[in-house]
Image (tube, rainbow, N blue to C red; front, top):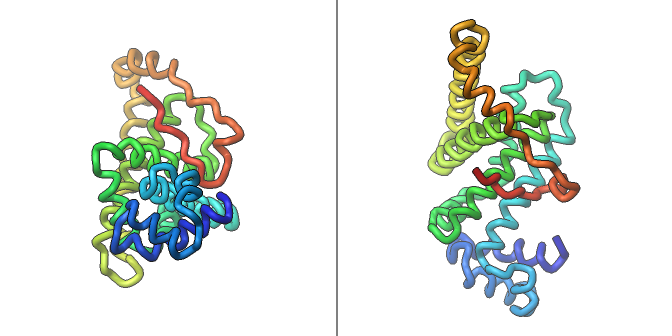
Amino acid sequence: MTDQATALLDAALIHVPFDGWSEDALRAACADTGVDLATARVLYPRGGVDLALAYHRRGDAQMAARLASEDLSHLRFRDRIATAVRYRIEAAEDRELVRRGTTLFALPPYAADGVSAIWGTVDLIWTSIGDSSTDYNWYTKRATLAGVYSSTVLYWLGDDSPGAAATWSFLDRRIDEVMQFERVKGAVQRNPLGRLLMAGPNALLSCVRAPVRSARDDLPGYSPAVPKA
């Protein structure tokens, strides 16, 4: 992100609680920073939408940097996931900025942008904690975590408990539910009858491979597109 892009985003954050992620917020940021509107449109072609996505990617990058600075190897895998989701939510800091973004990406023209942003976040979480899967598990892990992450963010937006303690308890419960499902799935796979019943689906899923990562995918905060069915 260029200095001008960063300055515009920083300036816009002051106005978003009042104007949303909108053209008005972009124009106000231009007035505050002295960046002309033509330059701002080059940096953020779709105005408020691209500002919102840049803010989201900034949160992703902050989470990744925090995870990289700490040793989580002593934690259980489920606790690493919980820690990463918590760090990502804490990176947002301002609930109103996230609330405004949630409203924006709920609109049909921008729903795909919102889904792509969330997919980028969960992909970054899995990659940051060492996931190396390349088969269909690459997809199922991210799809599952996307549900956990999204529901936890929505819970956090309405949480007024001290230190968001209720949110972190909610997150733990959601992850425990996922882990319980994984244990059941594992038990089915170990059972001879279960293996027989799952032989067909497993044969189909064995053909699925994770997308090939490029150097761009490893840039901090980069959000890869949601894989197409």
